[in-house]
Image (cartoon, rainbow, N blue to C red):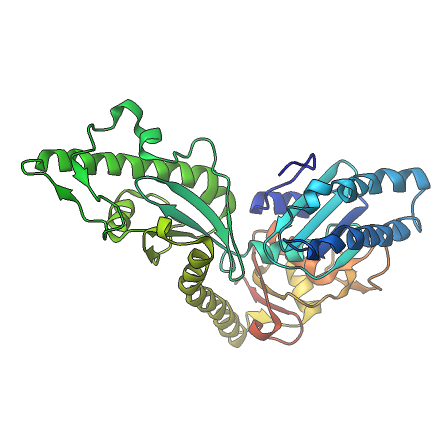
Length: 389
């Protein structure tokens, strides 16, 4: 993308940075966007309106020069025409004194512009949920590609420089030669190797090349992509390559189920659909497990859906797992010393969403937070917390 904007990659580390940021005021802007013309023509216009909303809120509390300094980076986004021609499905832009972050999201987000004492991060936290997102490693002996996807989209990921794209790139002069004695290894004819008579030793050497290649790919993808993102990794490869890659892989994020297919024979849309068919049951099972774990804890007196009780437990560091309803907002502030919730109006420029602040607090104190849709929640209050013993 030809843009001067500081585009950022959303990871657990970047979310933690936003959640722990101490500067104020914090400006959080979320907007659904469009990938293609002509739908994307309205996106910068809508963005400008949201910026004006935040500017109006800021002027209630701050001097004009301070407001201008805070709004200026947002206005630069409006003016970047190349940026608006390369957006995805959602946009998150967060700014504060000394910090400005721009995230492109593969999932539409609810439109929101808020000024508060902390960043509104719940949409980002939901986006980071590993069960909703995954990566696909499309692997053959001739090409390595990585994709980031969910149920609605699958987009190519720029591979880190250390990730080899081909066997030749990985092995260089150490690659067994010549390879012309081998036909259809990993090719379109089912991936079986046809050897010339007496070439068994050559086959072993080539198998060794593939093993070293897969080790190099596994090591680099783990270091530069899986660990930073924390996302499950789905392997798309021929059956014999699945077997070899899993033998050598040390990636704890590698999913048990994958796609037994030559990824080079699929369009990106076909790859997305087939990957989601594999990922969807695992996502549903994980969300059901979170719900069942809460119900079990609540039955033992170790869980609550009472917002006040959950807030007090969160401040005390007693919340082990917190489930938050994605679509709900509760205006107010949590007293960091007592856990008391002071209700307020969401348009107050010093107030954010209590549920969002709860999530940030629980994560900061070592608990797990998962954002679920209303139909997946085990409660009707917007929260469900399991407590530590």
